[in-house]
Length: 220
Image 1: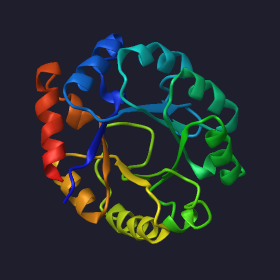
Image 2: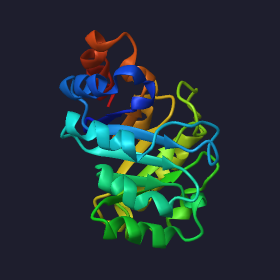
Image 3: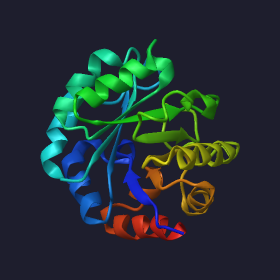
């Protein structure tokens, strides 16, 4: 079984020293940098905007995996693309025309991802699978870090993996929420190839980041 890519969520980092934290997880073996953007409206939390993404961009050459939990999403795509996002993932509930949003992201030269909330069915992807680069299955309700993994999402991961394989396209299947050594193994067995890990990456401080990331990769 292939080792998963690890995309540490900076939501769990020390916000007083974000640049240092990003450099530390880069050096520790992170594959991507996961940036959770929340607006206090679409989800019950408020985090960062494109200015912070732009400020962090010089600190690493790793792909910025930007998860937009904002509504409406379309007016902000250009700003996050210009700030240095490589992958822009959004929720289909955050705008009236998901396909148009995918087209807009692609027109900006970025990879497009669709995020599925726990209650959002895999069937939502039926008419998007031929155009997207990533599917993000939320294994918690978005808004806060440190939540417990929702086991029912394993069936969704399996369903999405079948859809991706049937499409014949190279599409990443990412899982975010409650990821630790045990749930990481379950997600990879179900078909995930990218894992978002906040608490599990940043626990213990910078001296532990490499071991934390290695443990998650080994779980696959």
